[in-house]
Length: 290
Image: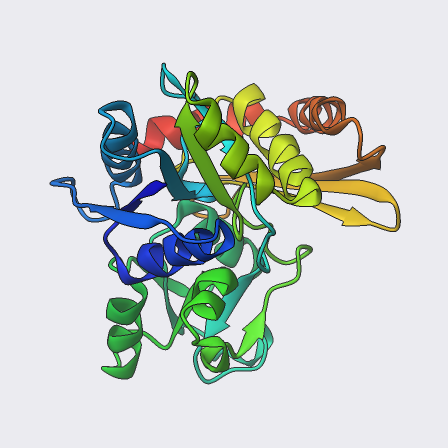
């Protein structure tokens, strides 16, 4: 089995984890000429390796996967999920401990929106690059703190860098955050079966609900939209946040119900969000982003 993956340190670690779960596989690292932060370009590059027969499976951070599937490819599996929460890295044990005007680094409009909704006084600084690059900018004093995915830090063995995790009530994670998406050619039964063997049912159901919300709202990886589904006490709880990048206008809501009906729950949540003006907010955010 050959696994296509981005060539970043985190992507290689994630792909190696999948290779081990499969009982051994060859990694096929893929580079991209896309701009830093161009997630869609990286995803397409990795998927092209599968379409061209250079690899059998593609491994993605699920939060980077566009809403529309690539023709000829399909989601084949979602392994057990890591912590989906957003994490703060820096000298503070809560958001309240940050001084007025503190500089917080993130490249995510979703995180920017929620940070400013919580603390309008913060200066949110755009910080791009891999995890090591971002951590160096913190060490160099370019920012007072960073918001990163807890999952990435944990998978890289950097869990000790986490000062605190945001609760879902404070910051709704990106759809798919903490999960991995395995993609195979639609006609490759062997690869699809292999991905199925390492799939975690709960993770797949959660990701299904989150993707259904993204699809209904026609969101992209750059939309200031947070969606997180989690199994809780025999039910599936799905929460979402939609806001303007400056945090001046936002809506938040949640639903809870039968975990066997993730798409129906997603549709119910979208209806609640739309009744509060979520679609208009996201359309305005897209216009302002140019």
